[in-house]
Each structure stands twice: as C-alpha cells, then as structure tokens.
Length: 326
Image 1: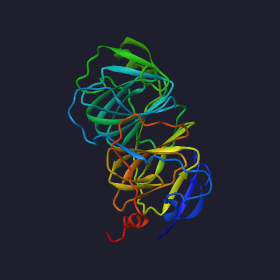
Image 2: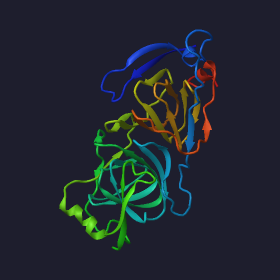
Image 3: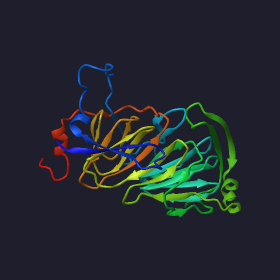
Image 4: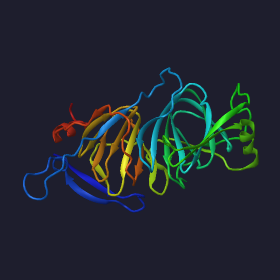
C-alpha cells in the first residue's frame, strides 16, 4: 500500500502547512479496538446535486444548499428577468455562473457574465439579474471581502443595460444578516433609471473574475475564502484543515473524493461538505475543475442529499490512480 503525505493546514493559509508522512491504509481505516475513548458514529460525507444544465421552468426563488446564521450558499436558475432589485445589508454576495448568460444591473454599472465567471456585489449595492437559460451559484459572505484573483473586466455605466430594456418602477428588497428567509426588512418601489444612472456619478465598479487553468484563491473574507482547483491529482497528498470546513462544487470533469468519512465520485453539479479536521484527497487523471469555499464557521447542509460516500478498500482506492490497471 502506498505511503501518502498529509498537509495539516489552517485558515487563512498564510503559513506553510505541516507535512506528515502517513500509511494510507491506516489513515482511512476503522479505529482499532480497545483503549482510549469509544469512537463516535461518524456520518459519511454526502453529495448534493443540482442539474448543471438549464431546464425550462417558471421563475422560482433561489434554493438553499448550505446555510447558517453566518453564511449561505444558494443555487439559482432563470430564463427571464428577476422581478425585483435586491440590496444586502450585512454580507457581500459573490456569484458564479454555471451555464447560460446573465446581465447584472446595479448602481455601480451593468455587466454580462458567462459560464466560469465570478462577480462580487459589495455589501449595500442594489442589483437585479436578467438570465438567459441561466444557472448560477450565490455565496453570501460576511465582509469585508478582499479580491485576490485577477480582474478580467469591470461593469460599465450603460442605459439600456440590455437590448429591449424599458424603464419602469420596480420593487427593491432590502435584507439584513445573510439575506435568508425571514430576514427581509423593507420592500418598496424604486425608479430603475435613477438607480442605474448612479453609475455615472461614481468610479466604483463591479469586477468580473474568470476560472483559470491552475489552482488559486479568488476571494478572502474574515471567516471564509473562495477559490478554484483545476490541477491533476493522484491522491497521494491529503489535506486536513485544522480550523475550517470545506464545501466543494464540481464545475467540470469527474473525480473521486477520498475522505476519512468515505469515498464519493463527483460529477458536474455535485456539492459536498467536508467537515473540519477530516483528511481528504482527490483522484482524477482527466481534466477536472471544482470550486472550494473554506469557512471557519459551520455551514450545515439544508438541501436534500443525493447520495452518501461509501467505504472502499485501500487497494480499490489505489487502483483508481492514473496509470494503475483497472
């Protein structure tokens, strides 16, 4: 059985990890009998799945995936305009475009986003969305959130914000906290032209970031970081986060996630939450890209699970590695 490395890391990852040598069959094994405290019944990690391609349906509110008083992750789809503006008062809202096209209209300008792109809406900025066969993810993160990745482009002051637009009074929804259910504080009509024309009076703009070909952190807040991973992995390096949990979303390709709480094969549209201090590694030979949100605060799963991780023997896991016979 192979010897592997374990990287013992801590948020915000500003110090090198402690690197430990491990025997993989022991790292993933059941506890030895006798001695010490009785082991708990550790639940397996679980995948949540939403279709990664657009499916025709009427407009529905975003669907919660993971949620706490400190942070939220939502999944949203639309093929029309959102029927109101939304203004967060308490969090930055970071979106990731899964498929389709979407126009974001704000008082800091408007911008079109395509699959593989992020946009951050600063706390307090009103925004609306016009999606065309669109799916996007929403991360509500306590700020201030610092941008770490390179800017691809910025929003522009433009009226009309998209072809066919015509001005009309619309509602503006104001929320507190992490903008969850029951956190609405005000709902009133606004003049949309006046709101969008504010972009002519400020130099502040939205910034659009794109997924790259490597692995990098894109955003950092006081309790959370968001990044992407697109590097090949043989699974010989495990990570263990001492002070944070990690939520991953599979963007493209497939991979096998190996953890001390079971093994999951992940495909586009899958989410998974890896608890704090649980060792994990990825195995894939073909290109694979996933997002990671690391949080020092627990974010429990609120969406229905699609499947649970299963136990595999060390030899079965080793056979998945590139170059091994199948």
